[in-house]
Length: 390
Picture 1 (cartoon, rainbow, N blue to C red):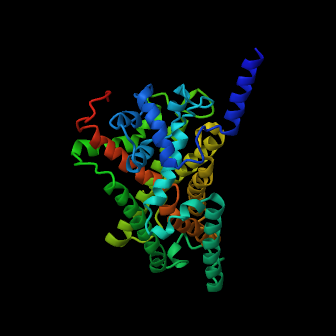
Picture 2 (spheres, rainbow, N blue to C red):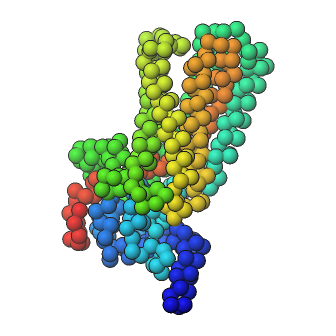
Picture 3 (spheres, rainbow, N blue to C red):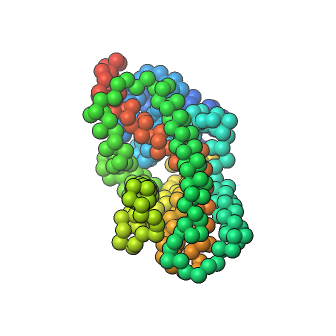
């Protein structure tokens, strides 16, 4: 009995020292490859998500395949809770955390320009908020020098404070650079995958899986494991609030752009107009979703998350939350003398979001969509190993 108790204490000490069970010394790609070789022999989790049937099509796992499978993983935690080889077992299998480490490496490895890859290592909530407040302060000082920081109510006439051409000149280059930088990074990732031809059926399936967040259901429809073995759909729902909130806000901006340039209808728009309704709905989603994800991040068990990425995760949800909060405050108080100040603060957060977009956690959405498309293409191709089932 004393020997058994000693072994139990040793196992508990191992789990406490390394709750994730991931080898911090090995390269992220090598550690995932090691785990997948063991998983490929076991295959207990084959029906959980797309990662495991995709795994069975391979006997070896070079870096390109590891990057693909890591971005296919949604970190639902189901495989960790089902694994008989998780820590404190000597194999120390923890696929979700190992995959998370690789995803971060993916963003840096394919970053454009390559000199900016180190920004992924510095992405954090403090630096993101500091950038946002710094940009807001710059705009506030500009209004103060111009004498328009405090002003009579202007009925929401934003362009009386910041001329339209000035706003376009400030934001268009930043937005275009963010899209180009992220697009080139994903294109580099895609070229390294040799995915094959994408049929309309494969594209449709990938889009559906992306929009529905299909693989956040744990592979069984009951959801993810967060702080314990209990299944919950909270992560999926908060991701949906965030994702669709962002899309609605983007739609509001797009409709307003059409109004301005196609119809000659400049802002402000009425509360019942399409841009305001879309923006309000999206803004509410971007309050609920990021707040929920922040709360879940604090609730999740330590063995589910990579501690090196907490700051990057919180930077994205923090910027989205405060961008939405300042935008809704601006909408409510746009007919007051504080409109100019609120507009400057909101624009500071918007610009900070776009400046950090290609080099922060937002990148995971683009890479995951690419991985889902590759899986939709791959699963329609013959399995060269003729092993397992899909």
